[in-house]
Image: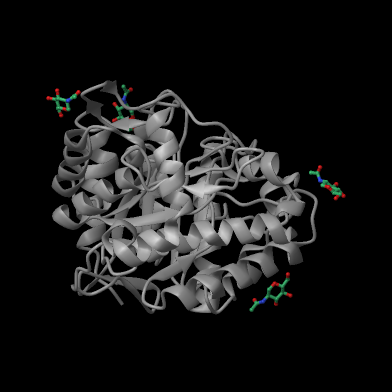
Length: 380
Ligand SMILES: *[C@@H]1O[C@H](CO)[C@@H](O)[C@H](O)[C@H]1NC(C)=O
Ligand SMILES: *[C@@H]1O[C@H](CO)[C@@H](O)[C@H](O)[C@H]1NC(C)=O
Ligand SMILES: *[C@@H]1O[C@H](CO)[C@@H](O)[C@H](O)[C@H]1NC(C)=O
Ligand SMILES: CC(=O)N[C@H]1CO[C@H](CO)[C@@H](O)[C@@H]1O
């Protein structure tokens, strides 16, 4: 309680702290080259290359540095180059001591960003270890879903909802304050691969104008803070036509992947692949991959398969055809499976049915072999 009060005061006095102790707010620069698009692929560590990546949303919430180190070391050994980690963790009430959170929006008091040891200092460890092992990070700023707060946490505070959050001046001002704090902290680090507006933004039943305008304005804002890092949206890649009118092609989530990808301040497109959640057969995955590659080709931008998973009895049998499509039949710049898992000091990391654990039989074809293929795939 006492410590929390101290942190609250510290956060409230952010401007003063900023002047006195810039290191608290801004991480030290590391000067190696930043990742950037080159045609439909990326230059990463000064080499134009295809990549394999993965997702560990939880890594910035771990409290043991050795666990972060272990994961990064295993990723490097596996030639996994890009890691997506939640850059948000919003709460509406202060959690129990030792539980990490990044932003507090407690009804009745001023929202603040947690710069303490149970706040962004945990994300600092992820960034530092990423620098050490040469891993690049994709960092989304908000969740469409209720996990770790997200839009819902803003809604609880500002009285907004899942659709008008995108246009609420008050909610957007706080979201931008949060973006500014995180971007400022890591803007000099080449461990950041890209900033991401959010995890799977949706505006169900809305005109695609809502998210288009929000994505345009927010990405422009991020570029105004940090022109050197790439920015991407974080959407699932919804299309507005084709596919015999099946759910992913109906535009009902208020997203038009192609339209959004045309935004100048979005450097590349991402899409996700969740056949079982979208009532599509697993075999349809390759079609979805080919369709997004074709749109990237039309607009001349890299496209990344940023999340994919299955809950079938055999992950290898289900996913290998998708990976073969990515590798043999497209110029998809990289694919990032959901979700990497490992054995931490606290036990196994989370498994929602999609996890592939480091060192298990599925890990060999799906990660080790596929990553070796992708990093040696000739670039155009
Ligand atoms: C942190 O993790 C390491 C293993 O990675 C373990 O040896 C150590 O006991 C852990 N520390 C705590 C405080 O749990
Ligand atoms: C959000 O509130 C607006 C009214 O301000 C309403 O029109 C809209 O349907 C609401 N959306 C949801 C998802 O409840
Ligand atoms: C899973 O599928 C792969 C590829 O089709 C196959 O080689 C492997 O034996 C299967 N594993 C199990 C446990 O059935
Ligand atoms: C550049 C581009 O492809 N723009 C398309 C964006 O999406 C709209 C539909 O929402 C199309 O009309 C544009 O041609």
